[in-house]
Image 1 (tube, rainbow, N blue to C red):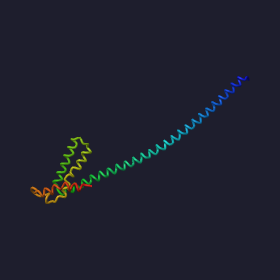
Image 2: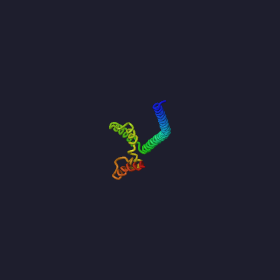
Image 3: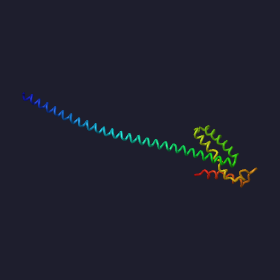
Image 4: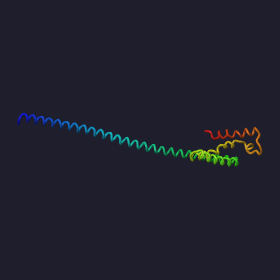
Amino acid sequence: MTTAASESSATSQKQLEAAQQQLLEYARDLNRVFQSEHEKESALRATTRQLLSFAQDLNHAFRAEQEKSRELERAYHDTLQRLLRASHYKDQDTGAHNQRLAHYARVLALFLGWTREEAERLFAATPMHDIGKIGVPDAVLFKPGPLDEAEWKVLKRHTSFGASLLAG
């Protein structure tokens, strides 16, 4: 073999070794990237599982709060109904008046563009406007004929009695 061929063969051998070395380095880099991506994927899966668990917990808490809200709404409605019954025991005329006003209030609310739910709440609450008459003495509330000035003052206090009754 000639020197030129020998040098060419040696150069080719060195280039081949350098290429092999470069390929090994690429393989190591690719392996590190693969490992890094695998770790990221594992962390992402764990985070996703944790987020799903949080979402389930949040969903359970939300449903529980919805149920509590419904229970509170039922208790509120029940309390209103009991107070209204109490006012009807005291004064049958006021009870009929309260029901008429409740119907008028609902119709007006719907006419004004309130939602059905808002109008129904107003309907349920409207009869409470005279609930304070429970605190007005029967002698004043059922007096036949016109009330004198002192009796009117007592009757007008029914709003304060009602506010006190419904406060807090």
